[in-house]
Length: 261
Image 1 (cartoon, rainbow, N blue to C red):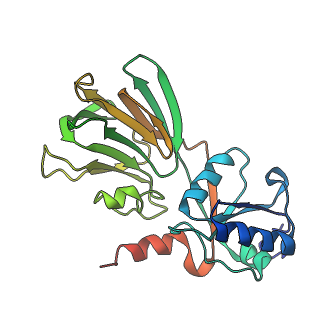
Image 2 (cartoon, one colour; image 1 turned 135 degrees about the horizontal axis):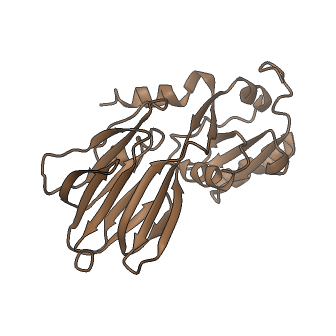
């Protein structure tokens, strides 16, 4: 259909978080616009905060449905402003950002393999009172023999304003073909603040002294304990479509975030 066709997003599926405001909003919107099964919908409207947006993106990763979030929760960086009026028109005029998730392959100290996808970031965290010791390789080349830290993360542009930013990592424009490799509370080398990597980079993180310094790995909300090694790379075969109001698109939000003080 043409981009200006008002019926392009006629069939809408609504999902809501457990927040009372989100549940109440869902009831009103369903009464006004109806509710379609997500597999048959033209678009999915997520009502809640950023946590719900991530859950919705993960849940519908295989059906290629565009997802439009409206803020009815706490943190709402990935959401649009809530309004009940003109939803079909808003969806039709929305700007779409396409993102690709990270694929994490993790090996536990028990030899078991784990795999998960991350839209925001893949993180390694120390799991005891002792700092973690990690070895970092990129594209098969050793880049850091020993990083002593609380952890390290690999973030996508979409996730660069989340935990990555809290760890003093760089904000990446949403269309940048980059990944952020950011240490969490680094002790040695003390002045290392991370690296910007091309989005096709393959990152390997090895845990040193894993018996004495246990480390857990997290891909968004999937956590695996007592990890020996993690490999991270972008999966370009999976495309996620996030919709934003044209006057407040995600690329503009990320740019504006860099000028906050």
